[in-house]
Length: 477
Ligand SMILES: *[C@@H]1O[C@H](CO)[C@@H](O)[C@H](O)[C@H]1NC(C)=O
Ligand SMILES: *[C@@H]1O[C@H](CO)[C@@H](O)[C@H](O)[C@H]1NC(C)=O
Ligand SMILES: *[C@@H]1O[C@H](CO)[C@@H](O)[C@H](O)[C@H]1NC(C)=O
Ligand SMILES: *[C@@H]1O[C@H](CO)[C@@H](O)[C@H](O)[C@H]1NC(C)=O
Image (cartoon, rainbow, N blue to C red; front, side, top):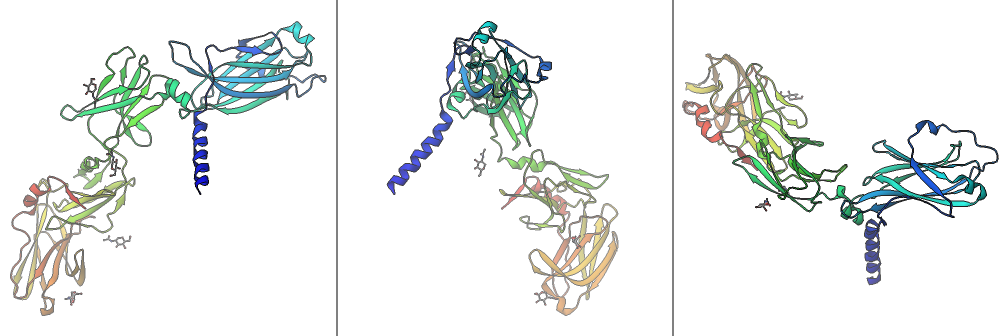
């Protein structure tokens, strides 16, 4: 048992070590050829040279023997280290061959680098058939690049070619992570000055003589720019910047990176739990009677229209109003009643916002009065409206079962409902709602007592009473 655990630990150490393999260092890049063969290289970019000639019959097609690729780190005192491909090829010398062309193509950027290796002519004739090793390590590459390396003869004979794909080590390699600027993402410390709407950022742990960029962004699929990025100059003594923001949104992130190609970026998104601010973005258009909500950040949320109950601690969903973002949250022909609210439900809880609670939109009221065995229902409204009235039996908190008596009425008119003795009970309610809109709050007057006392809904304007309570959000869990 103990042995087993030890073997596992050993395996883990071995696997972990595979990312920390040592990459050889060089101070200068160059070309070398074995066997005393004199060779020199010059950069080549002659794409037309890539057309091939038929190989002479005397030429063996296995003249190119092998190709091996690895990575080296070039570090020169006083400047940042860089990564280079170390390409080792071997071939048999032949009088038909003057040299080699080695090319490296980045499969990420499609950029290529080529070099032309020439053998000294006289010597190669003498060494005909001799195997020679060519080593070249001047192609600079980036961290984690996907490379395609080819080796061809000069002249370029058809079918005499070697190629290989290669992945350059990434920042997880301890040597690369420690010495290559693109991996030194830096460390960010920030401070929010809410009064000035400024985030100040201190940067540490990066190459101090290099420029460094800091920006604010909104994270959707990618992190989208919010304003300009700031530069910390390599020569600045104070590695600090201030960035202005307009709102502390949950998707607001601070990003920092060194001013070198393909630099690794460090990202902090410290406000991701501050979702409350997202629910403020409700817009009502009176011309189209459209109520819409657009999130400033991506968020997993279910949105409902709901009716705020009299006790203000519960908002009953209005049927068929449920929407799940990223579905468009837009309701047309919406009643502007103060008790019509929007409910946002996320994993963290529920929030209710009542866009019409502040009394600036037309509201309507329902009242009842008892006359003998009749209940009279009146509607008042600042605008033209049509209503439906229903007697229902409130068997559960959230549902009122219709007792089948339906009446239509316009504003200013009233409707009389004849109540029988058995309909007198505390669970019987009269429900009214607007029928000239798609989404209306059903208002209810319950507790219709026998003896027919008059009941009115609310005292004065419910809109006014709500104003104070609904200015701030209700968090319902
Ligand atoms: C940033 O650095 C300055 C100067 O060293 C220091 O006064 C400030 O507290 C630092 N701010 C943060 C957020 O670390
Ligand atoms: C957000 O909340 C989750 C769960 O409560 C927590 O794990 C996470 O650290 C919080 N994020 C921030 C930036 O505070
Ligand atoms: C809700 O949707 C269902 C199915 O689409 C429909 O049958 C029902 O009448 C709708 N209810 C309301 C109140 O619109
Ligand atoms: C209302 O519902 C309750 C419970 O289901 C029932 O006992 C009662 O008879 C109902 N009242 C009417 C008038 O239907």
